[in-house]
Image 1 (tube, protein in one colour):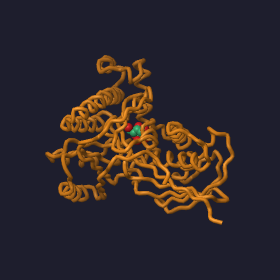
Image 2 (cartoon, protein in one colour):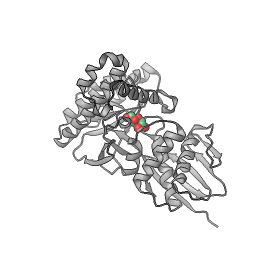
Image 3 (cartoon, protein in one colour):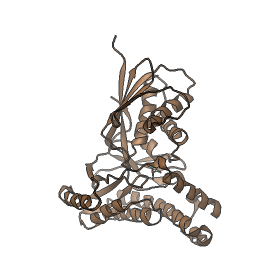
Length: 359
Ligand code: GLA
């Protein structure tokens, strides 16, 4: 008898602007991209997961225990938290993971995997979850089971992204507006080859600093103005002052970016990307030498409107907005970069995609 087999295609994401704002009730402007995690559910007599990325196949129990193998916790957490909401018994599945979405490159491979697994399980077990429920479930599982206190941006866009659009999300009200990208500049991603690992703690530390700043000022960051931050500069101290400054300014930049897009003003949009990068580098301190090198090289090219690090930081990728294809310029930067840092840099041209789907 042939075993039932279902495959799902779950995208990665870029974030045009609005970095480290989503766990501060702020604004973000991400999009799902045409780089995917493919997840296959196959009927089985036990729970088993195979990752092509790690070339590992592991049998596991669907219990609350965390696994030693880190990637498996993303799969297990997604399955467990989906079931928590349903109180249903399910049959075991073999889950196979492959894809062309690079891991740890700031393109949200973790949300792509977790949302894909929740979506897949909902589909194969007929749980009838909405896309928003799927995003919330994957988010909760990453926070509580994996232990990364990420915001909601990645799960929302992986679950609810739409082809050729950016998603403007107000993470306080959870209201979504889709922003069309006709006539948009060319988008390119450079993976710096420096892997980030948000589970390692720096990401959670930034989040704690934000909560601390709010405690000192007695106001949520979403409600703080630049004036408030300046008045509280002394009691905040240098580090928390810089963190708050980034978040408040970044929210303003997202709104300005939407205005620039509506006016097709790509130069202004590019300037906002550069400003966001500088703020992430100097105030939020989540960039790296390698990423800064790439952004500085891009600044010298006049057909580049703007560029910045995207995602959680501490490595990962740079997003570029340019007037035209940059193949020639980027191959020169690649040589310089690899000579300087002895790390491989990868270039991807990206299109904007729909959210997770069945194949
Ligand atoms: C990671 C998190 C997101 C968001 C970004 C930074 O990608 O998963 O929730 O906080 O970092 O903007």
